Length: 157
Image (tube, rainbow, N blue to C red; front, side):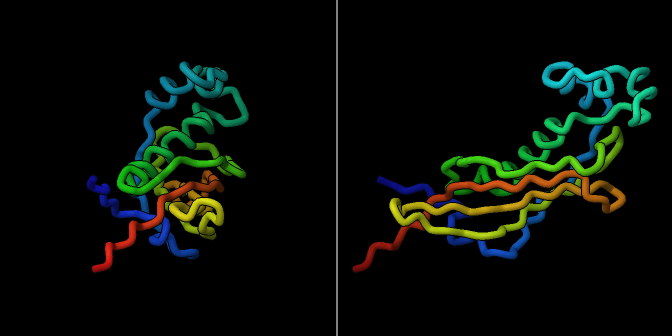
């Protein structure tokens, strides 16, 4: 039986290290489309109502922002990792509204790592994902954890 080789294993996450995950520009059309399906509050879906709101225009749902960040995390390292899923997210903060035309730059910082004591084939990685806009302003943070498989040990001869 062949074991799949990944780029990212539990041992590759070093506290304090930051993984840059790239950029994504948000359009008004995608903001409205997402919100119509999942968060149809007026300031997300109705241009006139949004203009009259405290936001002065359409803004992305916080859940849309989280979804965009998640996609960048998956594309940036999860898809090529020994990920075993996540036991949860501890905190999400929507610090500033995300507006049409904003370009988000996302990174993932490893906060801590803990090998499992009951299952030696895995460990938990605590991370904070950060999104900043084109002006360098922090717009969202997500603090959570992921389970990752340990690097397979080479067979000794």
